Amino acid sequence: MHPDVVQDKAGNCPLCKMALVPVRLESIWTCPIHPAVVEHDRGKCKICQRDLIQMTVALTWTCPGRSDVTAITPGRCPDGAAMVATRTLRPHGNHNPQHGGQFFMAPDNWHHIEGAYPQSRVFRLYLYDDYARPLPVDQIKQVRAHVVTKETFDATTHTTKEIASAPLVASNAGPYLEARVADVGSPTEMSAKVRFKDGTPEYRFDFTFAAVTTDPSPAPTSIAPKNAAVPTTAKGRTATNAATRRSNAARRAAAASTVTPTSSTFGPTITNATPATTTAPAPDPSLIQLPIPDSVPEILTQLKTRDAQVAELIAKGNFAAVFVPAFQAKDLAIALEARVASLPAAQQDAAAPAIERLVRTAWQLDAVGDLGNRQQLQAAYSTFSAAVTEVVGAFAP
Image (cartoon, rainbow, N blue to C red; front, side, top):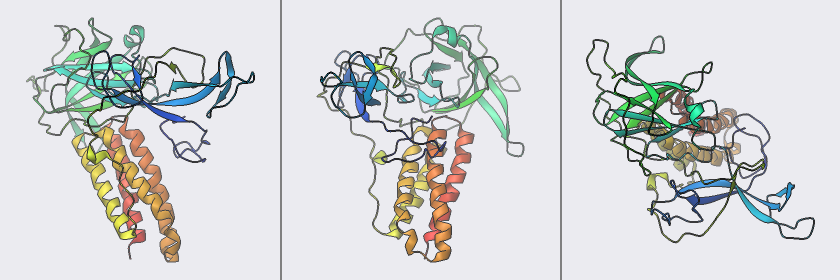
């Protein structure tokens, strides 16, 4: 149900409580434009020289012509032949933007969207399925969406009022929706409100653009139709936006690859794996996994630091990176479990459930961060931060 949840031991899903099933994962690298290129290390595409992007696939061993024989470790087929390694895509395994924009997963757990700002006054929306493959044109035509560039929020009623918006319409230049928007400067914030077909809920996705986005696979230049509405304020003036937060700077390491649809329950099969030799730029140091301190006071200090980092990322609109400090906080909390027995009885009663809440809400932050809805993310963070406070309080001298 939740393929993003991957644990190193048997247990239950922290989100839906279903029993976890064994899976063997492998990281590969592929080109965002030529997915037939599949490598086992960082590098450049051999065709276009673009940086390869990373994805996680399921690795199984099968017997040719025997769809009923599948294993997660190598072995022998019934006829004695060696089993063959097979790599298949995982749902939600690709959360990399494919056109230089910002990538989110829809709350229906199937659709994915990417918002881009390819040129001044133009917002573009790409739509994908759960494997991050572009939606067919007939499904794109069913989408009803618009982009909001200015709105007000009533904290009492928890409702928003749109002041400036524009319809997103299908483009003749590519499989995406596009709209002309007001010249709001840069950086700027926009919200896409999307209904994937009639009779389904409308979902909100919040974007923060520091500047015009760059498409690694540029399509023919286009803008919205000349008769598309240009957003105006309630008084008829061109809308403006004074947002100054930076754009999304980190995405989960995963990407699409060329696939051949098969009947495999693991998803489409990936082919043509070849080692890469070129080295890509080093990762952002702020996203590197950090070691767990030895002492409780140091762990608590790190825990409070991760809490502050989550808050900062949300404030900057960097929703995609929230999972990094959230998961680091989760690991810190789990490390505290071994120390619970050394606490006085009253503190033990407070510490154990607080740790459980923190672990659960870290997963929730990860899931909500992928959805791109600022209000939902702030609500999840409020619960997470409260759990951090409870854990720190339970272990305080």
